[in-house]
Length: 519
Image 1 (cartoon, rainbow, N blue to C red):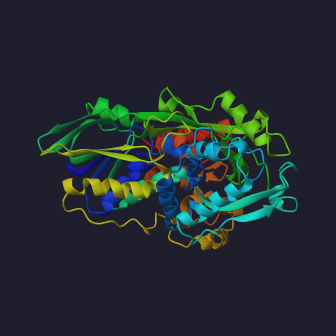
Image 2: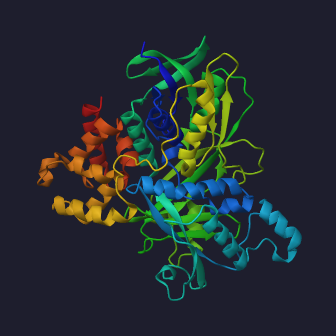
Image 3: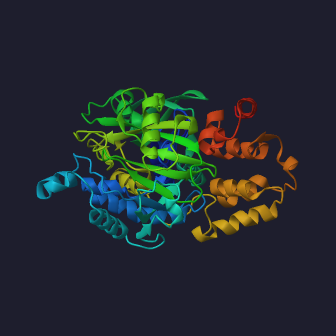
């Protein structure tokens, strides 16, 4: 039987890895089991934004927005390689409307019925003023007004859009965020296990007994406490694997995205509002593409079966085409992805209205070991969620250290956000065979660890086999040995997005190499 631990974490998404990292840094013995790959579901299928959630102001979720905004800058400073500030352009149209079921919409329909659900310009500006100041101002600049008739941001848009508001939020490489939290957890002593499914967990005296099936076969583990961070599987684990009679439920909401050819040349994101009250983003993506999303729809199938439907693809194309001069069509789409958000069931009437607040449910009968179940959450607040989770577990895990993650850098992020350009230039200077686009990809994925991956190489051939798309054997070895990559999807769609650049033969070559080296 493996050595007993203080805390056993079920689930290798952003919440599970964030909790494991925080707990290990407090001196706890931690083990994490992920049934597949790290970030294999919800945590790799987000819109990739560190943001407060501007539209949640319409639902009066002020606490959620304030917490997310205050975290946004903390996170960007802690991981400047995989996260960075981004400016968002919100074109204005007098036809913009609120969703009819938001608290703000209902209030306005009562006091200003003649507006008929429309968003007046002054109200958007007031909301952005609140958004600028809820979390305090620092690294990210505030809102300004743009004249789209003579600004480069107006060039790709239809001439009917004459002005816009520009505000700040942040971008993050979501799956890499998860992996780097797992890396830091391991650096602090945590035992991270992928391809390891928890099939049973029950209390036995003063400990939990957890049974897993994985590469080492069937194993039993003992722990003083368990965290169920199963994401979209949290309820299944709670009531099935752990045998709880809890009445708590989650609502699965599918968010689909499309990736198109590059639709415009500048580096800002667009925030588009539809006549139906919904919003989407159009975001510069992976140097040569544009990311558009997201939809929101109830999801009834397995979380791993989530796919962008043709109807969702067409909806996003049509929505974007309402703004861009050049029509966005399905022929422009090079990739789609869809993820399932596990939202705490609060009785909301629609998927859009369901709360994004996280709920931490502590199950700790007197004299028995504790279990904590994590419902919901946003990628922007994952670090705060981890702190709150360990705060709830503190009485049941005496001796744990205090909070430490605020300001702590993730692996490779040991430089200031304003130094990113200099790091990219330095990598190309130190390795002349690495052009700027390749150097940018490396820094944006690995930060200062790029130098460890490239090592003493003097020429491309020194990095081993070249798989195409700037992926070399040296990088693959790093991903296998340091980042738990086991399958081709782990490499080309989660650790990187090189699936956008590799052809079928190249993908097969990567898969064959992994089959030989990632056993």
